[in-house]
Amino acid sequence: MRNADLVARDLKSVWHPCTQMKDHETLPLIPIKRGEGVWLEDFESNRYIDAVSSWWVNLFGHANPRINSAIQEQIGQLEHVILAGFSHEPVVNLSERLIEVTPEGLNKCFYADNGSSAIEAALKMSYHYWKNQGHPGKKNFVNLSNSYHGETLGALALGDVALYKDTYQPLLMEVLTAPSPDAYNKELGETDEDYALRQFEAMDKLLAERHHEICAVVVEPLIQCAGGMRMHHPVYHTKLREACDRYGVHLIADEIAVGFGRTGTLFACEQSGITPDFMCLSKGLTAGYLPLSVVLTTDTVYNAFYDDYETLRAFLHSHSYTGNPIGCAVALATLDIFRDENVIENNRQLSRCMAESVAHLADHPNVGDIRQHGMTLAIEMVKDKASKTPFPWQERRGIKVYQHALTRQSLLRPLGNVVYFMPPYVITEDQIRHLAQVATEGIEIAVKG
Image (cartoon, rainbow, N blue to C red; front, side, top):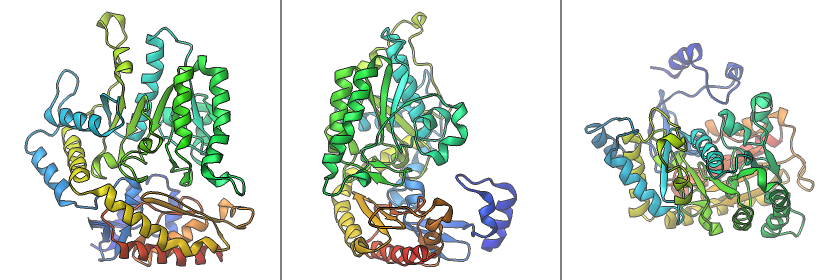
């Protein structure tokens, strides 16, 4: 099969996500035949380094032999079973392992299918907890400006990225928004930590005044990924945990994109030294293989639902594929790789290589910022460096970087004017340096228009 053959069939039948389909009249659709390690290969043997981990999910490369083996073994035993009234060994093993590696106190695991579904479950759990505790007036949620938590209506309401949210605003619940600690907006001479502490004052004031009506605060620790890979200091979440305890409000940590080593520690919350009331995980949970998500929570939350059926205090929420055994087997294989292969320590060297490979761009007149947490690095293109004036979004400068990268064996899919690296952890230093060179070339092309 030629690339063009599959593309023609695709465009007749497939509606692609997060895409203006008319773009494909001029922007080539890339059909992929196979993957191995960091590489994706099309039907004409062109190869691309998957620098964005296929939407931030792939941790240990495509067609990973260890994960493939786990799938094959599980398929031969049990593909799926209802998790209401039944159980199976993979879901029990996975729950025990997750409780072991996540922050202390998260002792119960509730499974769903994807990140948005995990957020929805956490929102319902928090509201229902307060209702069971005799506080039905607590029904509002707090988010951060520029946040993103998914595309289903509840998760979308918790976001604050206009591109995704504005169209559907009439369908969404109202939420309270506190200013982000995003360090991009700090004053000249101000540290990331100082700025985070200054921004926290507004959150503290909001909680002090309205905690009686607030169920939970929902945050993406350290990186607001879909908000342009904007980053902040972990002290913000240390202070937020203290305030949530003080005012009787839940803290929901959305670690769907930032968990499993993306920020330099296994979970981003570790850098703040906190345990949230709910931790939502997906994406890297199955290393890019299968849809699976989980909400971890505390015994305190769990016990608020534990009662006789007639009280109607149970959490009657479900998904058909909850706790799918094959997905759980993949997640267990993923955790085994973290345990056995010194992944976090090895990533530190890769992270240093990423930083060094793009350091030359710090003085570029159209680079407003280079920022990094662990294995996530972002380069923000701007029209004017001194004022950080952005290029008009309508010019779509990032697309030019994407198009150039495809000619240089690289998949770089910018977020607006932000070029970022979030590669699988099996990437080599030479491949990182190649991506940096490709990004540099693409930025030069993009800023010249």
